[in-house]
Structures are given as C-alpha cells and as structure tokens.
Amino acid sequence: MPEHRLLLVHAHPDDETINNGATMARYVAEGRHVTLVTCTAGELGEILVPDLEHLAAHRDDGLGEHRQGELAEAMKVLGVTDHRFLGGFGTYRDSGMAWHEDGHAVAGEEVHPDAFWNADLTQAADHLVGVIREVRPQVLVTYDQFGGYGHPDHIQAHRVATYAASLAGVASYRLDLGEPWEIAKIYWCALSESRMRESLRQLRESGDTETFEGMDPDGPMPPFVTPDHLISCAVDGTAHVEQKMTALASHRTQVAPDGPFFRGGESGHALWAIENYRIAKGTPVPGPDGHETDLFAGL
Image (cartoon, rainbow, N blue to C red; front, side):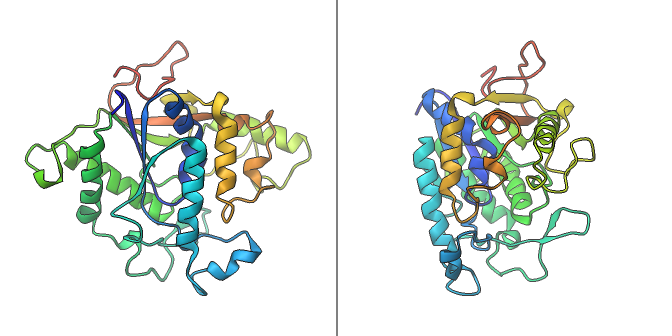
C-alpha cells in the first residue's frame, strides 16, 4: 500500500465525481491510494437520456446496473482502481427523495424495504469497518450531517461513515473484521460560498439565467453551499479538472452535457477545479491563507 491512503464514502454513482473528482485524480497522479465506497447504485435517479428511459424503476428497473457501468467508466478516467459498493453491489437500494417546500430534499412517502435509508446502522457500518481495517486510510471524506442538501441517502452515508470510523478504531470490536484502525482525519465535502457567488454573478452578467435557476448571487444560498469561514481545506485540482469533467460526462444518465456543470461564468471549469472541505476530526495544518491545501497535511 502507498504511504498515504484516502477513503471516500458516497451515496450514489456521480456524487464522488461532482464533489471530489479533481481531488481523486490529483492524489492518484501523486501515487496516493484512493478507495471509493458507494452506498447504493442510484436505482431511482433521474434519467436524462430518452433512449434509456426504459431503465426506470417503474419499468425495467435496470438503472442501477447501468449506473454501475457509468461509475466504472468514470473511475477509469480518474485513475481510481479501488472502488466498491457498500456490502457488495445490490446490498442497499437507492432510497429516492422528495422536495420539501423549504427547498431541500427529504425522504419520499414510500421507501423500498431494501432502501439505504432503512438500513440497520450497525450492520451497514460493519461493512465499512471491514474496508477501513483492510485499507487503513489516514483520511476519510464524506458528507456533513445534512448530506449537503437533505437527500436521505447522503444523510445515511454520513451516519454510516461516521459510525464505522468510530467502531473501526475500537480495539475490542469485531476483530473478525480486521485489526483495529484509527482514522486520523475526517473531512466533509463543501462548496465555497464566495466562489459560488462569484460564479453566479458572472453567469448572470453573461445573460445566463438558466444555470442554477432561481439562485441570486447576492441572495440567500441553499444548504449545499458552505460559508467560507467553515472551510478548512481547499484542494487545487486545476491540473486535473478536465479529467473530472470527462469523468462526470461518463454519468450520462444523470448529467446533461449542456447542463450547469458544463456551463460556467468563470473561465473553463474553474468553479469545479478547487474542491473544498470542512474538517470534522483531526488537527488542521493551515497554510498562509488560513486553509490547508492537502487533506494529508500534518500526516
């Protein structure tokens, strides 16, 4: 195993590339080990390709298998060779979501019995404990307690990752899952408020009112945008942003090629090149501007 090892825990295929694609590509290029654990196959995701609408859950119910292939293609682009589904493919199903009147996601009225939202927390965490003790990562990345925007699978991923990280370090817990391992640093994904406002401002000045429709560069921000004073680390993935965008395009059932990820007020894909994080465990080692520039800083 390389000296530095990163574990990311995400809810559905495409979440990893949106949030951390440039970070993952950069660390792979630097010779660091990157492990991705995806908790569901995203069976209930929106299908943006008309020819593939038959894969929807209410028809052929084949979207999960298709997105498994999209994820594999995206990871190949980023260079990530260690990617797994929590408990194995098909263990947990996409829980789906509904929109609350306040503008964030919530669980829908009907949730499948096998949905990740219904998972037993200890059982789900144990699947991840085995991965942690095998890979022995120094750094874990996942969502905040609200899952960014309230999606039940994102919230559950946060809970499972947090609990598993705690259990993995307990010397007397489930030794059949491997030797105990304490993760030194845990981070939550973040999107910088100042960068989001600047990008929105440039979009609106260019006449684009469709990208991030309804968001005002000078108005209130949705919950997935993080105030800058809460951000601990900014990883510069500029050299790998084209890899990130190519990998994101691999998730073609979920990401429109002319959608907001591929239109930007800043030059190129600059908004998506710098990936931000909030530290949830460990000691930050900030640089001159007050931010860490490396998730492994101090290790």
